[in-house]
Image 1 (cartoon, helix red, strand yellow):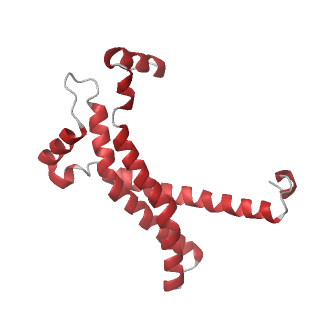
Image 2: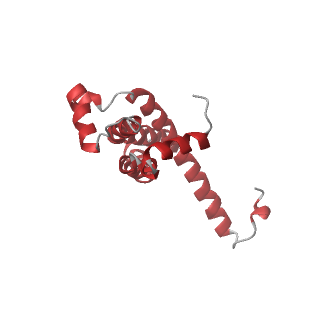
Image 3: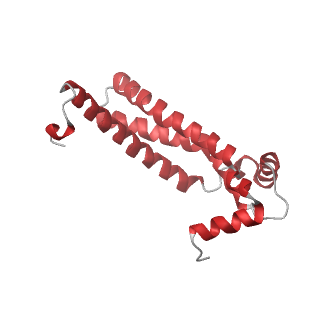
Length: 160
């Protein structure tokens, strides 16, 4: 406790070698890959679908799309996050558990529910992030379209 980032890095590498920095990387990649699919893929599709088929306003449709995508991202990515946390948490233990051993341990201790410990807090955060990320993406697309429609004039002439 109370050590700097550099000191922590040095301590980890000196105790376990540089490979310790990649501990849990495949699980993080799986989690982040699925999350990205939800952020970039489902929000806009769901938003458009509910707006077209249920007569919702754009704001209402975006709320449905964001909630659905955020919850979907949380449900599908949380097991990867739980495993990654366990794998990284035992990084300094004398015996290192593999991803498969970590999976079996979580399953043995809690079954399917074991993979969803901490789900509520993370689910709320991911759902909120969907609104922020997709709202930012939409605004950036609008700004880019506006920029292109002005024949590529410098940004300063657009009042930004």
